[in-house]
Length: 149
Image (cartoon, rainbow, N blue to C red):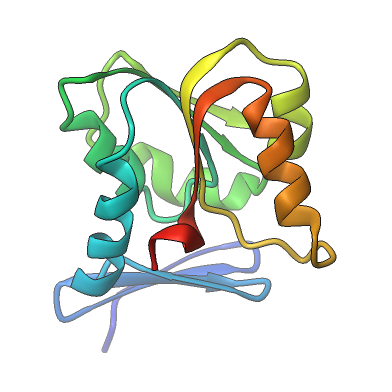
C-alpha cells in the first residue's frame, strides 16, 4: 500500500522513495527527472527570489542550498497545497510563503533579483507571456519552468 496524504482535492502519494502530488488537473513529482528540470532553473537564480507556485517544494529546497540566494518568497494560490507541503520542508529564516495568486502578487510587490515561475495555469493561451511581462517589471531575471525542458 502506498502512503497517502489528502487535503481537499489534493493527494500526495509516496512510493519507491519519491512522492507525487495530484489534484484539480495538476500533477507534480520529485522524481530524478523532475528534480533535474527544477535544478536547471534554480541554477540561474540568485539574491532575492520570488517563486510562483509551491508544488512539492523542490524548488524551495534547491534554492535554500544556494549561498547566492538571500531571500525566498513563494506565492501559492491553493491553501491545501500550502498545508500539505510547507510544514514538511527544511526551511531557514530567509523563506516566506504567501497565500495568493502570483498574478496579483506581482502587481503589488517589491523588486526581486529573480522570479521563477513554475505554475500550471488553466488560463487561456498567451497568459503565460502576460505573466512573464508582469514579472519583468519587478525582477531582473525571469525564469519560466518550461524554458528549462
